[in-house]
Image (tube, rainbow, N blue to C red):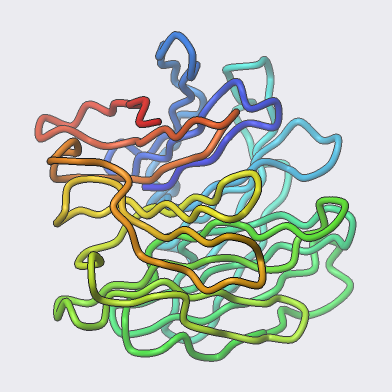
Length: 272
């Protein structure tokens, strides 16, 4: 499953691989709608993001097919029934697309590609004018989970924070990726991190929130400014999350956690 804010930040898209569909939730009222109902080819649905320009559409990663499709809105909470674009072979090799970011000014899709023992970063030209480019061939031996975009001046997309996890807890970590120079650095690892899932960044980019499945809460890091080191910290006290976290988003100085209950229903919870 994957989540993403709508362009106007009013709705939250949630992909559901078991039901082969996309749900959309009104964040304020928590009302859920069926946004897109897929068929049997809509399998392995995972990451999702809004179009970065004026197009009222979303990009969706189909990990089972190594493909990304674009789906247009028919109304604020309902999609058209057919794809308007499709990009195949986006990750190549044994990797599958896990999450995506749309860089509209440059006509790029950045793709977080993953498998059980590693990950990579690819860049797709949405105009079809160039072949996919591998920006980072390896993120290490852990499996990437989710990412949160890093914005520079004037909203320019510079990179992303990525959560990573493997069955041995000692490999749990958060990495910072630079799209411009293919740089990679470790933000923090271990400590409070055991099984990180979703990740979100505050508007001033000095608080990094990580949805923690083992801790059953929100952990992460704080820093004074962009030149300071991150310090790990718990943002919630006690166990507030169930066993199946999907992701978190930061919106209007508040944090929202999305999770699935044992019986399959999806909930959006105000955290901060």
